[in-house]
Image (cartoon, rainbow, N blue to C red; front, side):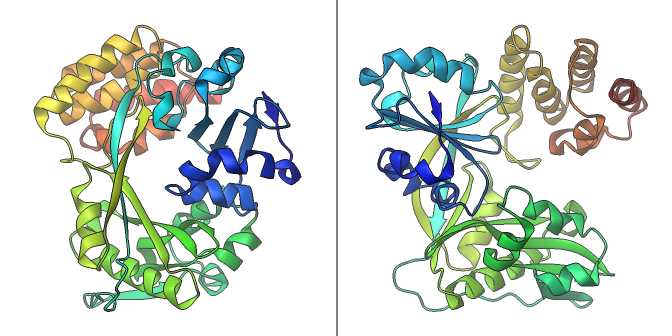
Amino acid sequence: MFLLEQAAYPAAQSLLKDLSSTHVAIAAVLDGIIEGEVWVDRPVEPRVALLANGDAYYLAGVPDEAADSFAELKELIPDWAYFFVEDRWSDRLGDIWSNGFARPHPRVRMGLPGVRHGLTATALPDGFRLVQIDQSLLDLGPGDIETVTYLMEGWASPEVFLENAIGFCVLHDGSIVSHCATDSVSGTRCEVGVGTEPAYRRLGLGKAAAAATIAECVKRGRPDIEWHTHASNKGSMAIARGIGLIERDRHVAYSGNLPAENVGDLDLDTCREWGLHLERASDHINWYRFHATGAWTLAGDRTRALANLRQLVDGGWEGEAEWLEGYWAVQSLVDDPEFKAIVAKQRAVNEA
């Protein structure tokens, strides 16, 4: 496989066209707006193209014509990838990916309807203020400004982010408590993401930030809005529908992560089944115990969750202690003395 310089990206463009029609991130990488890497099996008339953007990997091409590239693909695609492939690759994953335990994640793509009657705005509660994400916000430096500076990561530069990204955040008591912004843009297209601090959910803050962001996207000539989410994320889809977005299509990604982002997205039986699967996978890939810990926490089994966490840390996991403390699925354990002791052990390893 050949790693392309940006000037050579057009060689992969036709192969990635279909996946790009679903994922704005692909087009944004090819445009040079957000960071990424692109490989092809040969520099002239390639048969396979692989694009990476953060932990997301996208594979396109004709597998029957490129079997000689399978071993190289297996070397390139990490087991922790969040993996999107064209349908023709779905039964060949074992040939080109080292993660034999990943499962499909059902996902939903939403967007503005063809006929628009205006977006549904949301009034903020008293004491909350909507502010555009721009240089003025950075100069203001509110609390939790890391929420915004984190959004810049992955863009070609902070300047490219400020010039192209569109978003709003909600301030309360001088801190950012909710935000919505474009994760990637290309031409008239943009993919929008939203997030709200757990203590401030169910107040309409995410909906207000999203409505303002999408209205601004339309105003600035990027009306082709795309909103991607896990099919399990009822809250995200409710926000999208509440401001006038409709479902465009459904697709899958493949991953070893839990197919969810919030407590309550998965029922208890599903969490237990995932916990069993992730434990089995952990015998082969140690980091699966990170997600097994989350699954058993969500299933309400503290003992089994902590047992997996302990095996993760004792097994030489190279992750950061902060990842454990910030993992959404284990928040009910973060004040548990035993959990704290295991995290402290990992922090000592990180600092050694």
